Amino acid sequence: MYRALVAGVIVSIAAGMVGVFVVLRGLAFMGDAVAHTQLAGAAVALVLGGGAVLITLGAGVAAVLTALGVALLTIRGRLREDTAIGIIFAGFFALGILLISRQRTFAVDLGSLLVGHILGASWSDLIVMAVLTITVAVLVLAFLPELRFTAYDPEVASVSGVPVTLMQVGLLVLIALATVVAFRLVGVILALAMLVTPAAAATLMTKRLGAMMVLATLVGSVSTVVGLYASFHFNFAAGPSIVLTAVLIMALSFVLSPRGLREALPSLEFPLAEEADMTPTGWRRTARVCWGACCSVGGVCWGACCRVGARLVQRG
Image (cartoon, rainbow, N blue to C red; front, side):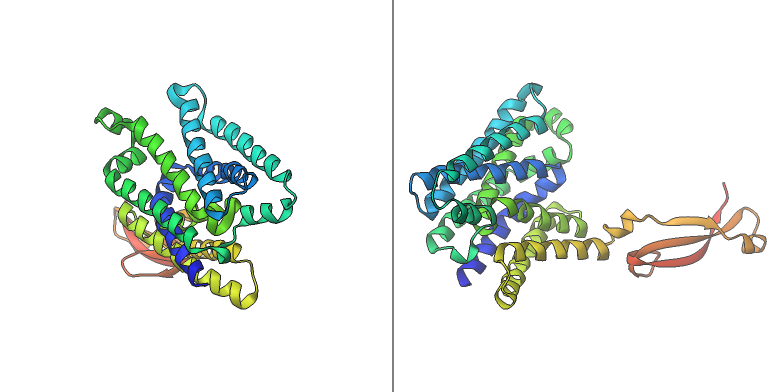
C-alpha cells in the first residue's frame, strides 16, 4: 500500500502536467491510442521474458513510436490526425494481443496489462516511473511558454516565430511518456482516465494554466489515496477504484464550479408583465433565472439550484 500511494502521486504529477494540454487541445483520442499501443511494447518484452521494469520500458518505446508515427503520417496534411491515430492504434493493439495470445499465461498477463497491478509495484518500478515523471516535468517547464502559445492559438504562434510543428510533436511525445507512467498504475485501458479526468476537473476550477496543472495533480493524488483506501476496505480492484474516484471528483467539480453547470445551463431573462406599468418610461422589469448548486451575492450563481430575482433594465 505504501508503494502504491507513492506510485499514485508520481502518476498524478506526470498526468496532471500533460493532461491539461490534452484537454485544452482535444487530444483525448491521441491519449487513448498511445495508452493502448503500449500493449505491443509490453507484449514484446513479455515474450522475451523480461520483468516488470523491462515491460514498462517496452511500453514506453511503443508509446513514443506511436507519437512519432502519428506526427510523421500527418505532417504536411498527408493524412488527417484522427485517421493516422486510428491506423496506428489498431495495428499496435492487434500486434500486442497477437503476441500475448501465444503465451500460456495469456489470461493472467493480459489482465494485468489491461487494468494494471498497482499493489504489485516494486521499488524498481517506482524508480522508472520517477525518472519518466522528472523528464516530463523538466520538458514541460522548459517549454511551457511555447506549449501554452501553441495550445491556445497555433496559427498566431506560428506567425510569431514559435516552432509549432516541433511543439506539436513534442507534446505527442510528452503524452506518450505520461501514459507510460500511468501504465503500471492502472493499465492500458484506464491510463487515459488518469490523463484526462483530473485535468478536466482542473479546467472547471480555474482558467490559469499553472493553476490547472497544480489542481490536476492534487485531484489525481486525492483520487489515488481515496481509491486505494476504498479498494482495501471494500475489496475493490485498486485501479478502477482510483479512476472512479477521479470521475466522481470531476462530476462534483462540474456541479459546484461556476465554470461547470452554470455555463452549461445559461441564465434566462424574461419580462415581468404584471409589474410593467410600475416601471419608469424607458425601463422594463425583468427576472433573471440562474442555475447552479448555491447562489452567491452580486448576481453570481453557483451549482444546480435556481435563483430568480427581478431587476430593471433600460429599453433599447
